[in-house]
Length: 106
Image (cartoon, rainbow, N blue to C red; front, side, top):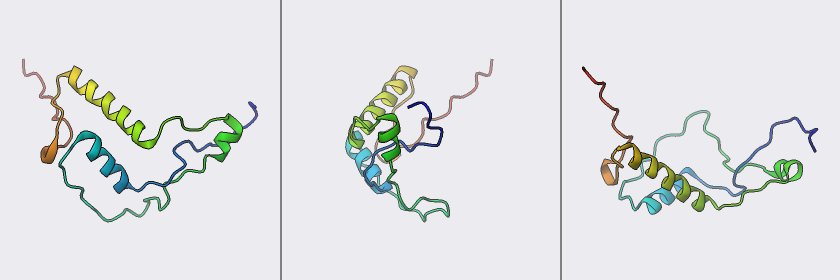
């Protein structure tokens, strides 16, 4: 309505754990990487399910893609970016961030 001026949560209204995301990413990328479990940080949210009722009511907004579809699109996008940049796309046990480029010494 143009008069609402408070924060609005956007996201998927379903509850997902970080483990769910890790498993989905392994499945989509066909990775054989192991999932490591570390202790939660003090500020780690215990609930990962946004209340999007305000977005629905005030913005007439709701998600149009599933979490899996969104991850597939995101992975495809970044894979294309890495491919176009000439970076190696890491896979499997060796997966990590792309290696930093070495500064030209000339």
